[in-house]
Image (cartoon, rainbow, N blue to C red; front, side):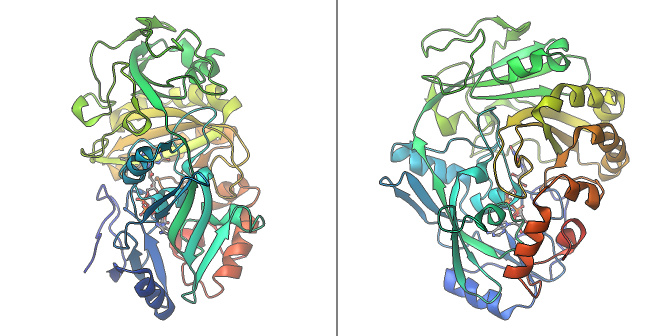
Length: 434
Ligand SMILES: Cc1cc2nc3c(=O)[nH]c(=O)nc-3n(C[C@H](O)[C@H](O)[C@H](O)COP(=O)(O)OP(=O)(O)OC[C@H]3O[C@@H](n4cnc5c(N)ncnc54)[C@H](O)[C@@H]3O)c2cc1C
């Protein structure tokens, strides 16, 4: 009974001989213990072959959907297969919030953290940075908990782990008091704001900020501004109101305030997106771009993303711009975001504040494959780290060279999974056994 024959966009057909969907942790433990080679699967939203295997897959989405808020420690413990949207709603009802969210609420917590999924904000690290503990079924079927406090030597290798250490069944996440966000969209940010010294000023203007460009004109077509009501440490509104009642200016950094809701993809309905227009609303109804009840993005797509150190943001974007005529025909839209540094060994933002340069391409595998070598060539001087869950072609040795703790991760994987039960071609290629 395959739960997923393909990934979400249908661009990866899993080669697995079987997809299991256990309904309890006990059942999962027995399955893992008895199966020679097996990989975990979340909500299958990755575009790379990171989840794929020619052996067995096990989806965690059938496990009981635990969401257990602990007000005493300001944490929530969630089953790995639960979607971020469900977690956010539950914690909000208890007066708490997640510090940040990705562009869509549909992804599983376990799968998103395993690949280093991020939202935006110069002070916001990726979603995995909120993890305080992970509970996983290891190769022998045992349940093991690793926590930030009790296992400081292994924990930083065990959160963004690409499924290499075991099947995560639960994660404990740090919470913050709930907060409201106002979202507005500005149109046509002049090109010089992107490649000049003003990029940093623009990017740090709001709690979370995204720039969307199709590389067709020289301007950034949309700027999504998500401002935390009441402000937040480090936020420098730079011309935007810091009072929830004050209107947003009609022009800002040369861009003009949109006069109605927009979708980042002009061909898609804005109703699929979270509310814009500046009215305050709960964090989870503004931080993601897409609403839980609608299809996010386009669906007809392949995604690619590279994270570069923040100081390389403007020159890296200028380098990408030299390929605009090659990029535009295969692209729906690009998104530029920021991610704060963290300490998780395989995180694409490990130890460096980053600018993330994302591409939502058409579902045109040949067109994307023809472009990627040139895109990666122009980005190479800027120490790019590809998003593990998106499509890339970077040479494995070059990928590893960007991760100072890659060998520590490989040792941890060998220690926790000595027989390679959780390995697949993707891991063998990018993080081979030492
Ligand atoms: C429309 C769309 C928008 C997106 N937006 C963003 C964004 O804003 N920011 C961003 O950074 N990324 C984004 N992504 C990428 C996405 O967040 C990642 O690919 C993420 O890993 C998907 O989570 P998933 O549950 O679907 O994981 P899957 O694709 O199911 O799995 C990904 C990896 O995690 C492992 N894994 C999954 N569950 C477990 C588990 N329980 N235990 C151990 N390992 C596990 C798998 O083995 C695999 O290696 C987007 C993707 C889509 C389709």
